[in-house]
Image 1: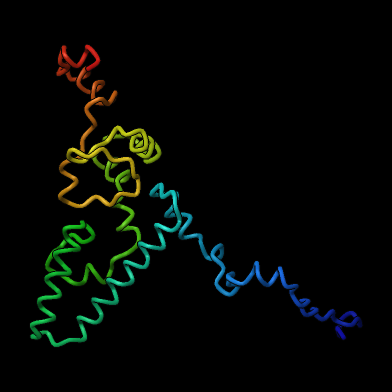
Image 2 (image 1 turned 30 degrees about the vertical axis):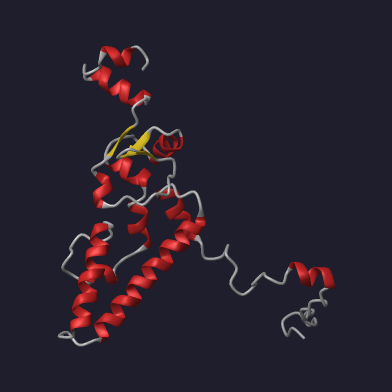
Length: 197
């Protein structure tokens, strides 16, 4: 009984037993860890870096967690241990070549590795940073249209992770309208290109 109003409090009823077909449908659903809760951070990252699939963010999150876990395991070993020194060098070299850390000498950058570091190395973000286009949606459009190539390969996957080595080889494709437009603007256009070849 509610002492302020003199009425009985309503007790929540227990949920009815699920029918057979309802149990089958809900067998793989985990109600304790629902995906749509606590996703404000994810929504901000999805919008900021123009990530189209949420699964990419969870993969980046898992990779960052695995790297942090590996660094913690390496720190538990003695500083003079040969295996620790070798594994540390391999890890730092790999993280530096993937452009996930700036300093190839310090494990501290690997400890502070975040999901956004992975997102910053996606192709649309790198294109925007290199001034190939003005914004991320435009970069995603160029990639999907096949306007961008890395080395000899035309890239159509906007989720591509760009390493330090790949970054130097990003250009417009040969038949790209943007490439022709840039050459016309800088007066470097070739008469052969103007014929539509």
